[in-house]
Image 1 (cartoon, rainbow, N blue to C red):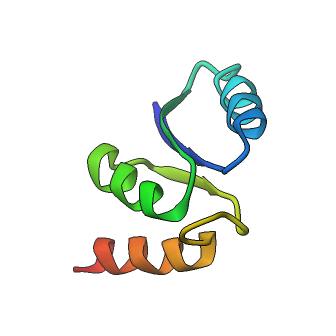
Image 2 (cartoon, rainbow, N blue to C red):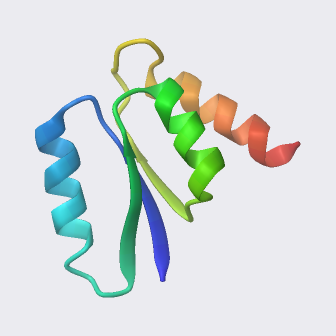
Image 3 (cartoon, rainbow, N blue to C red):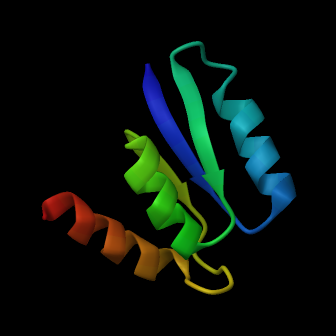
Length: 75
């Protein structure tokens, strides 16, 4: 089972991606997040195999969140 974290500030896109990905029986969306700060928290909590990340989001953009998640994984 592939665990996925979906990160997007658009509720429509979070729902769309979750529905699309979970059509595959081997994929499970374990969490969603609305911004980069929440993405870091959800990545820490759920340890996903894959993260879909929007780039432009409020509070913390996707690129900054990716940098923080990489640091977390490498420490």
